[in-house]
Amino acid sequence: MARPQLDPSHIMQVGSGFWASKTLLSAVELQLFTHLGAESMTGEEIGERAGLHQRGIYDFLDTLVALRFLERDGDGAAGRYRNTAETAAFLDQRSPTYIGGILEMFNARLYQFWAGLTEALRTGAPQNEIKHTGRAMFEELYHDPARLEQFMHAMEGISLGNFHALAERFDFSRYQTVCDVGGATGQLCAILATRHPPSAPAVHQLRPASRRADRREVHRRRRPGSSRGDRFRGLFR
Image (tube, rainbow, N blue to C red; front, side, top):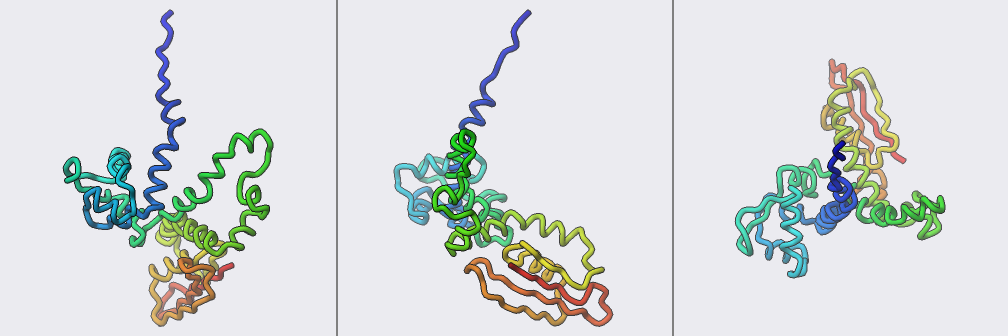
């Protein structure tokens, strides 16, 4: 009986998966997709804009092309790179559908923690902030405003699609009050207020936990004859 032909490609693909992952995470950290925006640039122009050393520019950019995160017209030094439709929509920080915050956190926090997986499996010891600073995750985040800002921005990115789907599919017209608990930046209430614009909006600025995370309390007053409810209110931790 003939033995089945075995193929190690899946093993190698998973085992080397961090190569592709770190390439994308570094591109997000360098704000490469934001620098490109709606433009197309040569490798030299991108390198100057993003502060890259000449040695790795083309290998880096062509890897992103191969991974389908960039598109390229032409070859060599004259080749021009541009965002794909997906990276323009989701990884350009100026886009309203930017989700890169979660990738920023993957890169800054979780990438190094996962490097300790073997130790965690052997010892059962946590590999997150408590290992490095002695403080639990949220204690450390609240201790460092920059890390808290990054965490909240990450929660914005990972929640955006779900919040839009909820606002589109759920009938909020039967309710007078919406309480956003754990939404980090009040994103759900902002989406609801945009989808159901108020006739006389009152937006109250709360003390922000970070520059990016602009916490807002959004009220929606009922229009005459409206059945959509009296108000939307966001309450944040």
